[in-house]
Amino acid sequence: MSRLAGKITFRVDASLQMGTGHVMRCLTLANVLKHQGSECHFICREHPGNLIGHIRNQGFEVHILPFEVPTTQQAYNTETGLAHAGWLGATQQQDAAECSTILNQLTTHWLIVDHYALDAYWEMALKPDYQKLMVIDDLADRPHCCDLLLDQTFGRDAKDYAPWTHAACTLLCGSRYSLLRPDFAALREYSLKRREQPQLQHLLITMGGVDKDNATGQILEALKATTLPQECRISVVMGSTAPWLTEIRQLATHMPWPTEVKVGISDMAQLMADSDLAIGAAGATSWERCCLGLPTIMLVLADNQRKIAQTLALANAVYVLHDPQEITDRLPELLNKLVESATQRISMSQAAARIVDGNGVARVIQHLEF
Image (tube, rainbow, N blue to C red; front, side, top):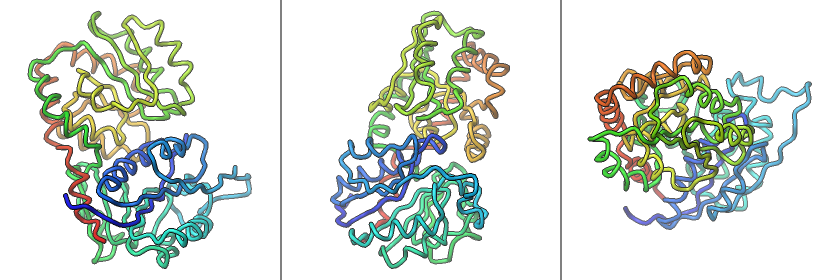
């Protein structure tokens, strides 16, 4: 990979409402770009549950946009009709004006935006402040005016963006472009090898960095009605901003199996590679689990995750719980099936591994020219 030299600015947020996945995948891309010689900055709004401190701990400068609790009279971006307009914490006009002030000081070559609440209106408003624009999206539900668009959803077809982008836009669609940290590709061979003779001694539970509705707690309670082997141990991964963290730690001490709650971990790839089965949200970590061939029962926590879950289920790479209400009724049934069938766990692992190979970042960076 050739070295890159340029200034790149990311516009991305995390919050209790939207979770942490957008920031984490941008950090994955930023860390590789930094290693290749680029100077990366972040612009983030100070939402409750933000990851500004985490981004700074990764060595990046963060330019903060203020967060104000909206009054009942305020309705951010309702005129745009965007499904996720309320996630921005401002109008697109306000956000663009605030970002323009920052971008004017940075001489940005590439502006990279990963935000469901922003569309072509915001992109055009900032056009004088960047040379090229990359959009990271999963929804294909709003117009964009960009040079490069990435949608890493498995099964996503470039035709899905035909109504939303101009002909000159380069579209990178599909799971081969998944933004995974290099350690996932590095551990792929080890992880797949150990699944050729599957065991069931380590269960991983990961409902995203926030899990605002406490699906994790429901899962732990539902596990008590399963045939999970007595010798199995459980690892629960949560973010430091997760609102139910204290309750989960307390619940973990009363589980029939040794249960450890891990917070803000830096070795997720190793943890997944060493796990035998996962119960995980249908978000960005889906591609991490696929890369390592980790058999998974997947839980849909938001409407924007349904396409991911549907396509992975059709590929026989996961079992799906379509709604948190299914945890109590269906989780024990699905888990017991996997406990009883090593053959099914092998088949699921192999199907998942065919979907993501861990080299997506390298493929994306090839299109970031300066």
